[in-house]
Length: 377
Image (tube, rainbow, N blue to C red; front, side, top):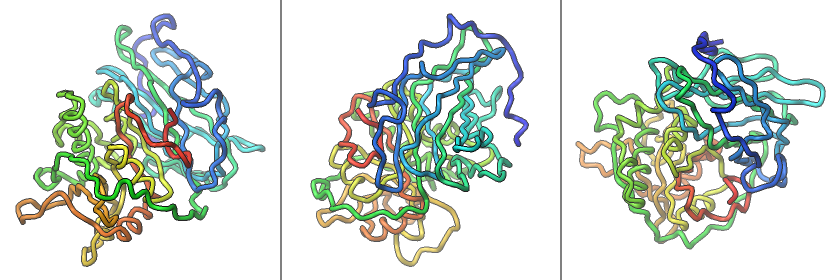
């Protein structure tokens, strides 16, 4: 277990000055109100937190959820969070499984801070036990059938500076469940969302910067669309803002947490069932970042042995996928915008169980949540 799990106490935060907490699951009236999904994955968003037990320990406020009824029989869960966490503050995200006969330990799923000089930002290694493990940002349990409990610690180094939790997203997966294909949403065919193009290879110091480069492209797109200069963030700044000392820049929820720190933006990790859901989002005018290995996107490429993150910005008239791919060598005359065959994207994306980053304004009209894979509005 990492020695960084418990930050040294600095100052007690008074209850009166901390948080205004009111609670519902986003889009429903109580925990567990979402109907079970017949698919392999399901998403729950929590916007308010009054049903969480609040405990103050020195400079830390600990929010412990009630039992959260899982929408599917899951064995993997990826949490996301959007928080206002200025310099001098931090968050710790933990979760455990609750079985009928026992509870697992609390696993740490992220130590998050923008002030890494005081509070390291990292995934936590060495958590494997008889019940499960944490693979970077993913809780992996050996048995399905658990409910979930969260424990979220918020702390600071000065009483006048306080973090604020705005949103928690929970992406559940049954890794053994089978899924069925959906009919394509052809309203997206022929539609391209103009999105700034950036190459990770433009930065000599980059080490696997596909994720922050894709993140920067999407933030720049929203900067132009919303006339928000603060969202026009350079790739280097994104890479520094998501860096995980144990995993580099590829930690999924660290990337969405970086996006979600900006006022008025929502960012979270979830998993889709089918490419038709990507088409739903493109039809709505919202680009989607997806996780798909580089070598599977086009024949003849060498297997790098690692994952890859790219940005879906549209579809051709025949349903192939238009991608801003950060792994582009501009000095060799390549273009960031690629057209990849539909079947190649489907097969590559499956390797991550169809993982996506959804990043959009909270005011946006998002697609109908027909399979329970994203926030309900």
